[in-house]
Image (cartoon, helix red, strand yellow):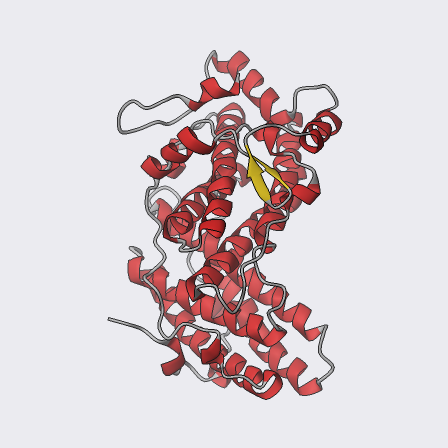
Length: 399
């Protein structure tokens, strides 16, 4: 059954305001919830944060009071949505447990988008990035066992493998080599725009999370690892945001944001296993349908174009959280040794890359390497989760 959000009317904006009682949702049970329910919560929080921040930026770049007022009305509801979504996360979960869930989101969301992306250039960008998030998951899983003496398997539950990806120390590149070529807004597939916004928002939220939670640990190795991977997440945001055509008008970007929210709430509603959480996805979808129509009205008035000229006529197949083990292994076998040069990718280290490596590491082992040394000294082994038979061990490629 096709679903065209442009033909659906949601809840009128003046009926969307919720009281504290309605905002005070019950959190998910960290010990019994579907891991992908947690992933959907984390991903949707990132989408809502991006929607809020984009609305603020648009308001700061328009002189029309009525536009600022309309954005403020919608943005307040978006802020309520963000609080509901993010507050689904349980307070009993530690920062590291949430971190591991964040990296599970990054791996399985980016891998799924890479599989489904119709544009080869954009597909390569997602394939490149997912191998780095995959390694971040591995490093944090070892830190988790060191500090909390628990295993990441209790969080990822075998849906996502935990083993080395592209070594984290090799993720530090000259900033100019993190900028990719953007898609062409008038030529790219509408699905590609949704993919780019989704991954950009997810990585941005991860960057924000690490920037704020990294120094909350007392253990030096934890503080240092968050600092290192937090810098890499900034690289990832640069990588993904540069995929978006900067020629898109503010109004075009606004309707793309709102359409993407409809797409993701609809997708998550269709696959959610927790009835209480599913009800939230459905409610927010009906709110976002109205936000989309309001954005479309602004585009018609201020851009002089119909939103149908930039949006798909119906939602694509639902975005799905599911295991991507075989796909990630194939990328490990074929793309582990890639780095970036300019807007492209190369297999050999080059002068800018080597200079950056020398400057950032200063001739010492980075935290991502030292966490493995300290874990080995503590347990006499590394922590990893591999499933479904034998396959090449990517850790051998680190040597």
